[in-house]
Image (cartoon, rainbow, N blue to C red; front, side, top):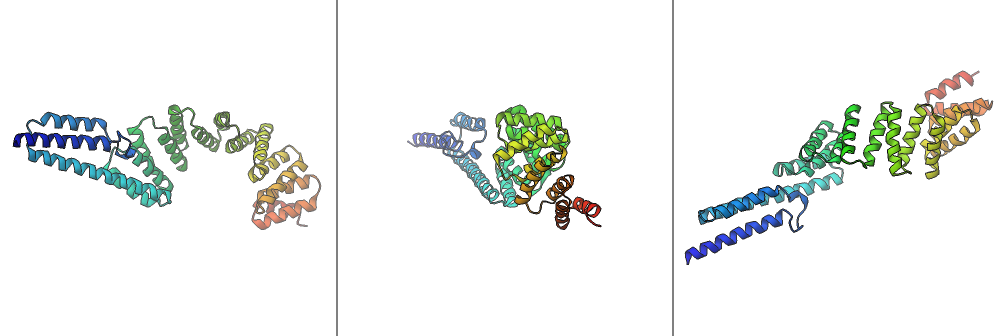
Length: 326
């Protein structure tokens, strides 16, 4: 009878271990992804239990049960650390989030999502080298993880490592060719490097996927200005103000282009809108003053440059002193 009792007890323990393994690793979708470790490890554990069942003593079975339960308990704690880190990140407590994600990683070192979230926390806390480390850990674990390459590029940009940023964005696009944010950020990085032609190519890709993406229109317009293609720039900027009549930045560059094209009244109209939306826009007073001056409306020109001077615009000060002080 004792032998039969031992057999059934071993079967019960084995079944229990198998059940909590399947439950814990998410076969029934009761737990989140942080608990889905290496499936192969589970299979190995269960196969080992089955193999040694005939020779292992009852005390050793109970020891195995204790150790396995401890592993599960620790992993659940890792999941709690992950959730705590997520909550702190959501509250912009990035230092606290970093600490919690680090605890999670110590208990679940294969959990790539914890590395990714810690990378985001490091980024927003300004710890850029640490963020790069975390994103690289994600990439080592999941080589095709486009979002890790994207944020790696974003971090490199903040460090002014523009070539590295472009390489990272390009990798993100290799793994996800429709990653619109990666096209936009690579375009913006190229714009920052004054590679206007390359930037336009990226903004074109963005706009082919979303034709009313105003930031892409705006930045493509700036690239056209950099190339002195004012006609194309005006088309992009005009479309932006169709989408948003109160976009002061777009109105400013429309006024700037109209001054370049010697359409001074159109420049005044556009720049006046800027000043309505942003009364402290010194550059708008400067440009509108130029338009007034070219229309021989000197009094209005001096009034604008005087206003810009009071705001602290150096260019307004220079023109006011040169043209308005007798």
